[in-house]
Amino acid sequence: LLQDHQLHAAELERTFIAIKPDGVQRGLIAEIVSRFERKGFKLVAIKIVVPSKEFAQKHYHDLKERPFFNGLCDFLSSGPVVAMVWEGEGVIKYGRKLIGATDPQKSEPGTIRGDLAVVVDRNIIHGSDAPKTAKDEIALWFSHGELVSYTSNAEKWMYGVN
Ligand code: IDP
Ligand code: MG
Image 1 (cartoon, helix red, strand yellow):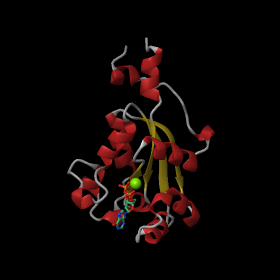
Image 2 (tube, helix red, strand yellow):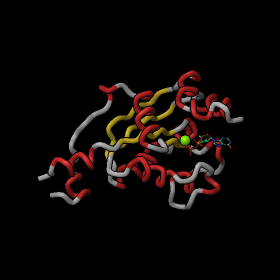
Image 3 (cartoon, protein in one colour):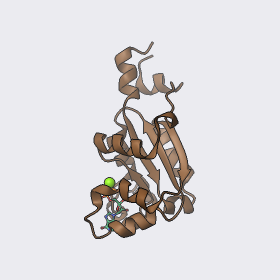
């Protein structure tokens, strides 16, 4: 049986991941979802939305002083985005590892951006960079009721607590 602390260690960490309009248009939704899924992370929310420019500005508010901020927000709001919340032990940091470096030219082969993208302003995916941003971004993109808590049948095999 899962003990309480082990269950919580596996369940509590969540990150916000978004497939940007270029990833959606290029038909990479399943490819990207699959990389998180087969790693063993658990999908707890997913939807497809076209964010408004104002919403994109909120999402990227930390970058508002950067020269590329306006173009970035225009791009994020230019078409459908697949917004997701993934859960699992270490998912914030490891999600960033799966994604690769911000600039796909600097992303290792085997990462999402390394394998599937070429330039920094069309790098197909977003992932929260820290616990605080994960919490804020999940709250920005999803209401509480859109997050689904469940026990995955694979969990006891993933976490070795059976
Ligand atoms: P991250 O997505 O890897 O967390 P951030 O520094 O948070 O990278 O930047 C957010 C997004 O802004 C990047 O994913 C990328 O699409 C875009 N961006 C970052 N740096 C540049 C740049 O120098 N020129 C154009 N776009 C950039
Ligand atoms: Mg970032």
